[in-house]
Length: 258
Image (cartoon, rainbow, N blue to C red; front, side):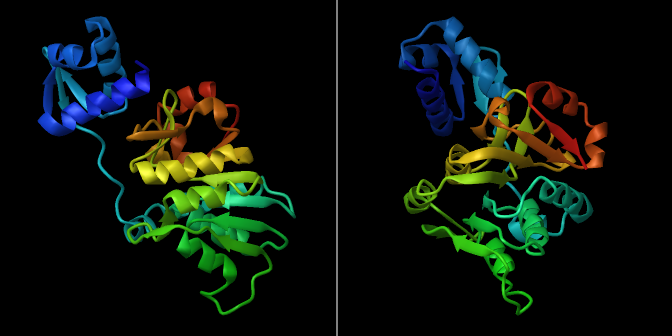
């Protein structure tokens, strides 16, 4: 049995019973106690469970705050990240932007450029780039990905969105995760958000992760990009005081502190 399948079945057991013994997992998965021990250690590392004597209990990371709250949090830091990220771009490039508060601020910086093509699943970002908030015409090409609408994140998602993403091959994907961990990479809380981010990363020549200091060293529920797959991480100056930044510098190709 593959590790991901074991993880899924352990998650299902915890979702059903909240607490599960090692013996129960061994019996249900038909694997050794040592395999279960290793799996529980790894799942504990992502914050999905807490090991206790004889087994594990469900825990899991908290979901993100609503988008409206995140849009006004740490704006100074996110603006510094956005300005540094724009400096990585060249005229005429095609970009993916996922839905998030940091990428929303990045969209404001990109809106001052011209000749870019931006593809996003964020309704908020698409409107910003189209100039709807200022009554102006855009100097960039903007495309909103199709799919179902998530009201909470004001973004499209689902099979239709994934199919739409795979029609494109872009120069740079710029994304903001829930957490960024040296071992687990860029992570989302929600599986449908991670699926969109993963598809974008796969279709991009370069992957740039935008993460303010509060996300450094944080593990969430679902990985969508390992550190080895990330070309550039952009964070803010306060990240220098976060111990986990040293691990990211070792694990990732390039880290920019703005």
